[in-house]
Image (cartoon, rainbow over all chains, first blue to last red; front, side, top):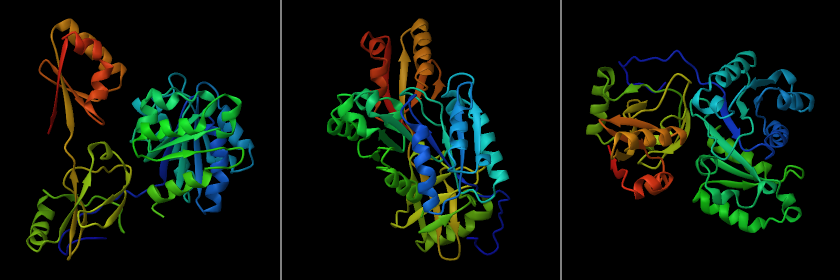
Length: 215
Length: 150
């Protein structure tokens, strides 16, 4: 403890697992990205737990539980019931409770990934819920998405442009989309990913290890 | 790299004040600048004004604030210096304009506070990006804007 002799102040609370958010529009590939991140973090020796958010089902959680990539008990589902952004921003109580419970059940957990329900470009995470968050958009959603300057794109700690492999099939100029993304980000981090080929995954893990887990 | 896992207290706390004051006389107090938008983070990589990296990981029931003491020992203190919060003052011309302005501020999820009949919007980016969202009201003279910081 860094203390001056004679000064006595103590804290009974402890530092828990880091919590990061993964947001983005419906279909941008958030769950697929998590399926890539699980083995990538395992390779780096990071113990994980996951919270998924769906509107009225637990479909994403079930998909990850059945993936065989992680102990199914380490995956919790939150059913938002209404606006997906409400439970990650205005009132994140349900997600905080889910993360707290995972942390209580698995004392070795170092990192909790909290996947938001699919939302729009305006969704952002409360810093009461997460320590750091990324926003996932995808090439097939339209090459103009970065130019729309949505708060999710502008405010996240890391912007992920996913499904780069689809660019030639959906008529998107990937180089231009990358330039537009970089312009919108104004120097803040950006990663291009192709989950099917595992491209860009290590770059995301590197960011999280450095900026959240301080390794 | 300095690792910090709790806030020891405020530099204004009586229990810490004398020790910090003593270190200040010897030039052994360093400050970590934290932007207002980052004060809510429990984990943050920052740098002291002396150039040393500080990895902050706080328990969920603790928060950073201006004057939070992160390190205090015989040789030095490291203290948070919060950046000034910038505000956009929006002055509506009438009660109906105030109603409409309030609607937009809520719909845009702006962080606000009230100052008499004015609305103050906490800025986390360029002021003109906020002004652009209510440009029809601004252009029509129904809301007057000015930027200020505290």
